[in-house]
Length: 373
Image 1: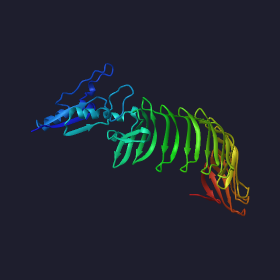
Image 2 (image 1 turned 180 degrees about the horizontal axis):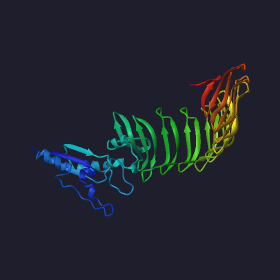
Image 3 (image 1 turned 180 degrees about the vertical axis):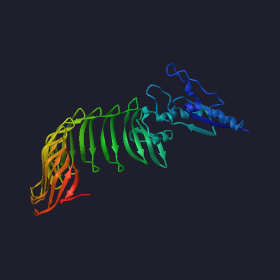
Image 4 (image 1 turned 30 degrees about the vertical axis):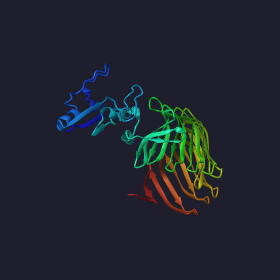
């Protein structure tokens, strides 16, 4: 009776690495005896009718290489290994733990698909190498030219390309990258340097028109950034310096009317700002990103005042007055230290007093002369 041949293909767990004895300075390591290693233990359980072959390697991954150590990709060695030990009745693959290392930046799904590779011919003598499951491309694919040189990577989810680009020798994103939506429309495209966005990046609407465009320097936005509406009408312009918004910002509605205007000083609003929000416009001054001084709101429909009041470092102070669109006072009262204080009155749109409230440190204690219990 011929023995059944079983190949155990794995990493340090298959090799029998003893972690508590490893010396990080000298790289001295020890190995469990064959009887204690799981392939050897399995051999003893199965008996003489089976022959268990150990193929363990410390640090082995599914299909990626370390930047400073070569020969650890399981995919690279699996095929010749199968031929070396053939004929085989069973192959057990135990890999994926090392793929979890931070340096590889891989998801569980990418790791799980790492060994199931298929070669797919492309135009111009190029070809893809990746995973096909149920006739659909899944996970990370490598794209090679006719000479076998790696051109870039593509990532698929149920046959839909999600992104494509290149990694450098440290497995960091590098060069031009493009991202796609579920309908194969480009979402955005731009450059990476060592995993950081760099140079020009462009973002798109599903119809292909540009939504926004600007530049990065090693992950930080810089220079002018511009936004457009879906109809190609200018939406917004702003400036960045050292990764922070800085300088004049202007925002337009879809018809070209200015609805926001003001300046930033390294990420903080500074000076006079103007807004149009729904049914009103608002104008006032910021100091270090906080409202200061007098602020006013005006109804767009009637051009009547909607609100007037003062702020100190974003805290409401003094008298605050709210108005109806016809100019009649709606509510009036005072703030002290950011809290309502003293008498507050509310009116109907004909100017008739409706109710009088009394506050102490922001808490109402009396209404129309009657104490609140």
